[in-house]
Structures are given as C-alpha cells and as structure tokens.
Image (cartoon, rainbow, N blue to C red; front, side):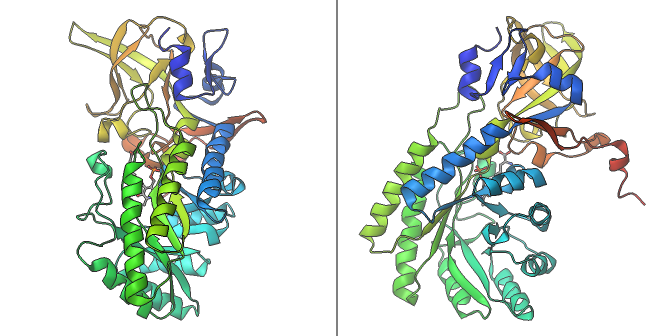
Length: 440
Ligand code: LLP
C-alpha cells in the first residue's frame, strides 16, 4: 500500500481505493476516467466543492453575522462552470483581471458580489468593469483612484470601492506569497501614513463611494493569529479614520483563506473553528475600540478548490540512473502544474491503477517539457512504475490549472467534474488547432 487509506482520507475524504485496487474519487474509478477522457486530466469533485463553499458561507454567517460573505478568489481556479457553482453556493468573488471578469460575466455571475483587485488596473479594465456594473473595485493606488473616479464620471455612475491597506504583518509563510508587509507592491501602508492619505483622497473624489478596507497578509496560513493580528491593526485604523474624518467603515475584507493540507505533514485544520476564533477576536476588539462591527468579507481560494481535484497522468518511461536517481516521466508537468518548479511545493503522489501495492521505489516525477527543472516532485515512494501506469497527484485544484501554460506547445488538460449526479466535462482538453488560434 503506497499511502494508507487513513492518509488518503486525511487529505481528502472523498478518495478511496476500490476493490480493483484503483484509486477512486467520489466513487469514480480514476483508471476508467483516464481511459475515457485521456491524460493529463484534472478530475474535480463537485460535491466536495459545494461542501467547502458551505463551510465558509455558513461559518462566516454564524460567527460574523448574516451579512458576512466569503468571496471565492478566482486566481486559484477560473472557468465559467466554476463561477456558476460558487454563485449557487452563495459566494461572491474576487477577480484580478478583466479576463476573470469576462469569465464571470459569461457565467452570469451576479456582479454586485464581484470585487476587482490588482495593483495595476488599466483604463480599459476599469471601463469594462464599470460598463458591466461591477460591484466594487479594491483600489490599490492613487493613480487608479483618479482613473476610476474619472471613468465612473464619464459613465454617470457612483462607483463603490474598498481601499487596499497593508497592515505590515509577516504571516511566516512562503516568502513569494507574502503580500501584506510594508514593502509589498500591493496597497498602501498604515505605517508610512500613505493609507490615511488614500482615505482623504477617496473621500474627496467625485463619483467614488468609499465603503471600507481590504487587507491580505499571505497565502497557505494555518493559524488564526496572523488573521487576528491583521484584524487588530485594521480595526485600529478604522477607529482612527472615524476619529480623523468621521468616516464609518461599512466593510472590512480580511483577505485570503486558510491553508490546505497537501501531504500528511501539513497540519489538520478546522476552518469553522478558525473562523469562530477570528470572529470572537474581531468582535471583542471592535467593541473595545467602540467601532461598529463592519460587514466582514474573506477571500478563500486555495481552501475552496485545492482538495476538490486530482491530476491523472500516464507514465511514459522509467529511467534508473545507477544508484543516483530514478526518473518517472509522465505526459504532463510544469505546464499543468508549475508549483514544484516555482515554489518546491510538496504533493502526495500515487500510482492510481496500483493503489493497494507496496511502495519501495524512490523516484522523481518528471514532466515532458524540454527543461531539467520540469519536475512534479522528487523522492516519491511508488511501486516500481511501468509505461502505461496511471499516476495521480492529489490536491491539485488550486493554482494548477489557473497557472497552466502552453509551454512546449502542450495543450492544456481537460477538467472533468464528477458528483453523485454524474460526470461531465467542465473544461475541454485544448486541441492542436486551439494552440494556433491566435496565430496569423
Ligand atoms: N485575496 C488576495 C488579495 C490574494 O492575493 C490571494 C492570493 C487570495 C485572496 C487567495 O488566497 P488563498 O485563499 O488562495 O490562500 N500561486 C501561489 C499562490 C499565490 C496567492 C496569491 N494571492 C501558489 O500556487 O501557491
């Protein structure tokens, strides 16, 4: 047995090993799915996704109040069917580009619940968003504020905004994803006084309705403390702007969601309990500061989609280089999952068609790109693989497909959704013709 049933369950309650010794997701045999749809293939468990959304929606309402709203961070995974699902689950969305906004519009997503982020929105982005009735911009900087005010004026609308504030918290996470510290390219720092200047400018801007503030301290955070620390600083800021400018904050957005378990070494986390703890802290602090409790937003991405997906590949070759290293090459790699190449991210990997066999072969999983760094993982224990075996990488729903590329002119995989109601292709596999679509 490569990973015990308990370990698989720990990572993902809907994964099992069936009577044929095959890995199954939501009861679907992964070997059958690979045969039917081809590889590389993302398989997404729709019921698990609904369950993950419900945890945030229900816990936030229960502990922060009825008006609290989780926004799905589209950057983690973005396609029309997903927007339809998260809308059904009662979530809003955080988008960071006109492309994500376009996808949301295509899906019929209620745009009053869409928040447009990013540190460099172009005039064309702003225009497109305003024309389509975007709910809120999360304003990053002064130039952007002026542009939104002007373009809203041209369209005869008053545009609602939040200001992105950097609270200066180091959440002790991967450096590349720390976005809330003072030297960040995002937002305006409280420490430098810039955040106050932005409030003054927003309040003085025509066609702008300032509704509140946003902060994001980083990604893959497991503890409550960094969120509570950030909330303390933000509530202090909210109290200050009330005193200085008489401004009453309606909305406080606390940023991204909690961390995700990629391997058994990652901590187990209870999201409802964490939200309860953060909410109790925020409420107590607001009372202490005599600040009216704002409507609370959060923007979970990873923890909504990561454990809903697995990626299936077909093994092509096994290269044993003496005692030095063994390579197992698969029909995908950094174009569909760049996270190991970029961040050295850990993943759990198994042979899906031999899931009940003992694992005694140590190997590195290589992608098919013409690049040595194209690896999915190193030092993985598997039964010795052979050409034609199906390899599964678990917990691949977040920042895999959304960061996928066509490097080496490899078509992006399909995404198949499975649920108790059946299976369907949610995103088609790209064809060679798709690859040349924009070529003149
Ligand atoms: N809100 C904002 C403003 C963000 O910058 C992010 C993530 C999120 C929400 C969602 O955070 P989550 O709940 O997913 O942790 N590509 C990297 C992750 C970059 C995250 C950037 N911001 C990765 O693959 O690990």
